[in-house]
Length: 355
Image 1: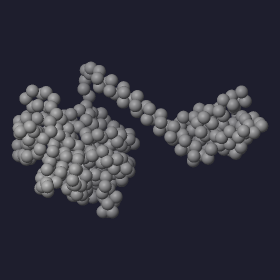
Image 2: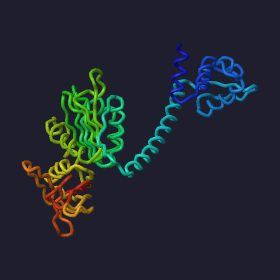
Image 3: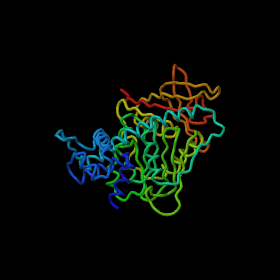
Image 4: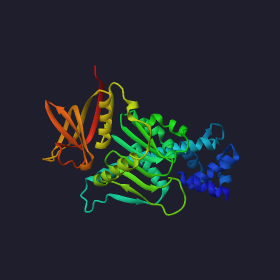
């Protein structure tokens, strides 16, 4: 029974049934000729040499050049690493192909613009969440359980090296020492001791959301959303900023990151303004580069200037920043800006100290 299960597992990892049988036979024999292996595995002798060569090419067995030739299996732990690496290569290649197909799909005319899908499996949610985090290029908002944050901390560190702004809210925190392990993975960190909504917003184009759960909990019906589309991203990023972020405890404030020549990329107007206000309090000169659209014409615009002031009227829902470029003042708003000059969609902050 165990042998049959092992064969099934090896097949699931990409070996043919004959290859799995031959590898298992070699594990039992230790070192053997082709004839001995064929007899032990129950494989026709006419097929054994091609199977052995295939296993050797996959790095799972060694060929001993004697007369007659003998074969020896690679240690199963080493073999698993070899198989895993080859699977990773195939998965990476598949990702490239799928991405290419996805781009073609996006370019194709659509009858219905479906902006969200329902996920009913926790493992799929976790894989998708990690994929979103890895794919961020401008900004990342996270509300995740502490154990998940620790699992992806190496990915977050790589993103910070590319000057991507990361706001990390973690929940289910029981010990402050857990937060200390995350200190260097995000620009600013907040936390809650109790469960919260699971939410990741990547740039301004994709998000995943799930109710107040632990990502690995078992039990009652599970459902989460995979969100694509500007309007829905705006709604969920607003929920993140005004309800999750605003009511969590501060562990690390963004001003701890400031230094001469500090650079960060953003896509959300609220986080941009928070950072600019903290920089202005500390007397930094701030250059803001903005990509977006002229509000009146809808034409694309790419502008860079010195920050002059931040404008916030919360009761009117107004969040904007004023910059000076080429001797003129421009008001920059965020997504769906109506009364400003520019609807900002991408922002780059460069800060320098006053001399």
